Image 1 (cartoon, helix red, strand yellow):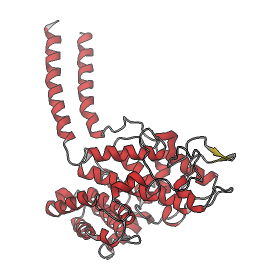
Image 2 (cartoon, one colour; image 1 turned 120 degrees about the horizontal axis):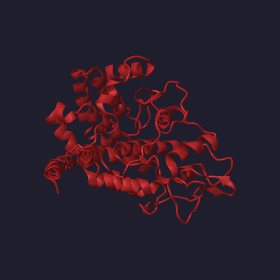
Image 3 (cartoon, one colour; image 1 turned 45 degrees about the vertical axis):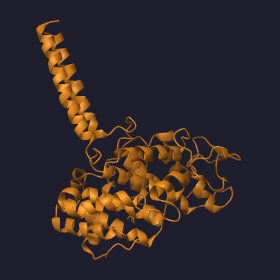
Image 4 (cartoon, rainbow, N blue to C red; image 1 turned 135 degrees about the vertical axis):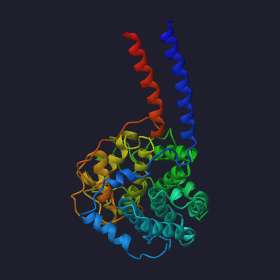
Length: 390
């Protein structure tokens, strides 16, 4: 071994030690190592401050929409998110302070609804807190919010807790809980709970080897009633009809199997939760948009192509995000209303020049861990190649 090679290897070991320390530090980061649970400040900074979508968000941010009431019909959560977007886009602490006030008013509002209300409403509060960097902006209030968020995941309602219904209810209850549970886990740095959330969600998408302990309702729309799933598998048929992409436990609300199929809005309610959950997990380094033969995409394809049932009203926020992820053309560019658990995607994801195909990543690998690994590999390869050519 030459002296130069020996020095290269010694230097590599030293660098590996330093990078390992960096990995450990990132692994213990209470933010979960993810920049932007739903969207990052850097991404928001690139969004327009003009146009109908921005004006709509700005108008809400400037309005007095009161305190959180809780319950199914409270829009306080999505309005708070709009205010957070404006705070960051304008870099304005006056708006940030209003967001903090609204986040604090959410504490205890869960008492005015059931577990589905919590599952729907919690998501936007978590995203708003993440967007404004609540922890650094107002540490004292954030500590109170964080303690509430950690506890409210386990609060028992007559139907169960947020966590338990994600693991038991394979319909809109469970999908909304999935999105809020995932967001909360990332915000709190609870990697074990995020891993479990993803495992359950993968099972809901159809991978029964990942998870299958759901309690299904009537099985009229299941492709295989002996092995029920949240989304029917690719190529599934029933009585000669295409049921590939059907959400059986929500479509059953429309009655027994029939053709033409019913235009059942509960399906889009479930997809509001599922799409949000998939996007959060996608940003966390999982690959849910490709899981089970692109089950999420197949669900929208079935609704459009077989049921002839595009989303309406508060379900339309899903379209820009689906187009953004899969490169489809479901959204026609017309104004969009916020949904039950999320909104403003015509502003955040409506730029039709930025469509993408789903990223394929190592399941569960946090993005922030990748650069440290790359720095080791790139450094070693570069030095060994340089040595070889001397």
